Image 1: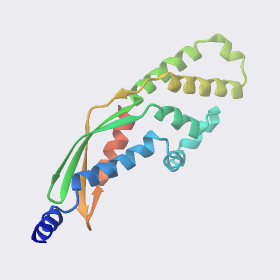
Image 2: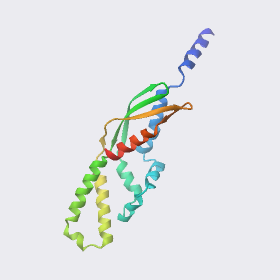
Image 3: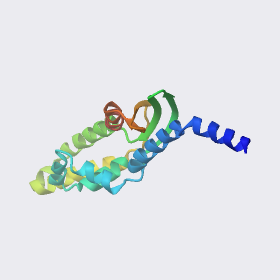
Length: 175
């Protein structure tokens, strides 16, 4: 019975596995992107300015689904130091910079097509929308530079800092 008491004391002294708790939290967050979770996509769709896509015949849900297709991630390292922690994450996503460059190039080519001038305004907008969607669909995901997500232990729960959410957003929108 002394061995059981000693073993119980050692296990409880170790406490929760903080590293695993952080990995689980990150996995849950990033899986919502990877699996194109409906709530996540709905949040994107409700963002300011997104409704302008519809003017070009682009369904916002289809836009974000296409842009995020192929998204993946690896949690490279988690380091816990008292009540703070950091996790290094590498994302694989379509490059926003490459997307902008490709859209601009494809729209420039579209504008130089003389047949565009024979179309109605509605048809031109639809053609622009189709060009944008074809461009997104044609992109391949690329690996981003690793980003660091910081956590704080608040009321026994590991919580990412506001700056960390901004780091994920920035990596997705500036890669």
